[in-house]
Image: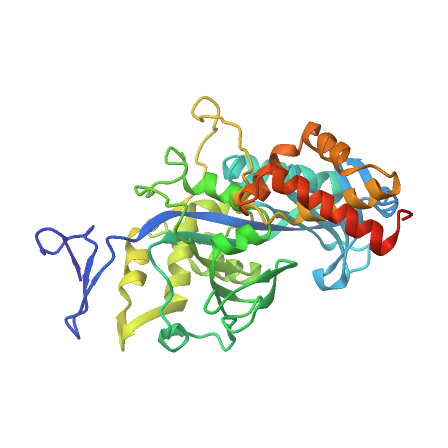
Length: 420
């Protein structure tokens, strides 16, 4: 039962929650909902791959396709496909040629994966046009073959309870608590997690519920600055419920529901319009977009965090009643405040700086350049502010950086000589 924080009267929007069994009151007034968004779209297509495309992709490197530049190459068998075209700037990865279907046979030969920044840059109809155009350029007899989506809610002021695995009720047999593991693989990146930082329920071929420290994961893959700009954008036109301020000092937890395309198909086949009785029968992301709130609620029914037997946890109730999936509903032209996005020293790991400095020292030793000249050339470089800020975050001044370079040069020369 929800109560108003001032009057203690029943309220649809109160942040006090009363457990009817234990009469325990939970105060969630400090919980900040930072938006529920579509984090991943994977659109599948059936068709016949155009024969002239494969030889071009097999050349590898940068190729031209559908009016854009792409990095082409082969991909591991685990993906289910043989070839990949990637443009990270656009935010698309095209997977082509199903391993289990001959190339001259019509089949599920294409999957398009879309990144979060591309999803949030345009309405679903426009995004679908982009994907369909890429599919038509790659295949003959093209037709959409369902999509998979990930829906992600970011929150502050809440952390999973210590006994989460015991309290979370679900049909899934697969439960993974990665809290005691320091190294896990997340989307191909090795991420260092502390205790109680990541939980995964369910299998990849069904519905998965993932709970993890998003600010830590974003920092580890050098995406924290991007996500901070998303979380702090109070004028974000896609956030209906973003009524609280983002605190950059507090961790952000993500509750992510991942739907395999087979689950989305079951959802489309089994859900009907309450007025007409017609089934949703969606095959594309654009058709599914209007039903994402229902899909999110479907996931919260499949996974239930309980405070006691038969009673939802207060935070789960808050999600079920207050969270709406925000998507771009119309063209952004004329209603978006555009601003440049800068990376900060706090928002990335700095591993690129350390790698660069190591190679820089090796080249300096080879060319017999002294520390004073090396430091002067480093300060004149366009990327000097990033290097300076990186070391400033570690408490080092410019003088300390000079001494560090001097020490590295001396060590490099003594240990390995001047020749590389």
